[in-house]
Image (tube, rainbow, N blue to C red; front, side):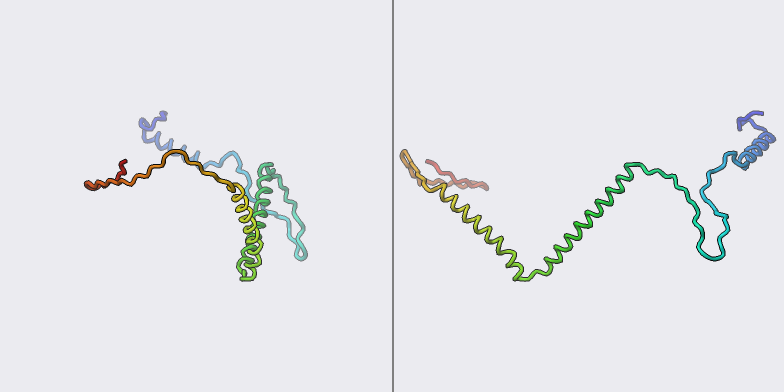
Length: 158
C-alpha cells in the first residue's frame, strides 16, 4: 500500500479515509486536568452549612507583592494630595474682600521693606560718580539723504 495520495487506488483511498476517521474519533489517552469541582457532600436541611476546606497553593512573587503594596501607598498619597487641594480650593472659593486684605497686608509689607532695602543699597553704591571726559568734542550736523528705487537709504557723512 502506498501512502502517496496521487498513486492510491479507489479501494486504498477508502481504506485510508476510514483509518483517518477512526483515529480522529478515538478518545485521547491523556486525561485533561480538572477545571471544575462539584461537592457531593449532603447539605443539612436546616442550620448553617459546615465549612469545606479549600486548599490554596498559590505563591505570589516578591516583586508582585511589592508592586501591590507600593500601588496602595501611592494611591493613598494621591488621595491625600487630592483632599488637600480640595480643601484649599474650597477655602479660595469663599474669599471675601476682608479676607484678601488680611492675607495681602503682610505680603505688601514684606514687599515694601524689600523695595526700600533694595533702593537704599542701590543709592549707597552710586553715591559718588565722577565722569571725566578728555579730548575734543566734535558735533556734526551734515545729513545726506539719497532715495533711489524701492530701497531708500539715509547716510550721515562726515
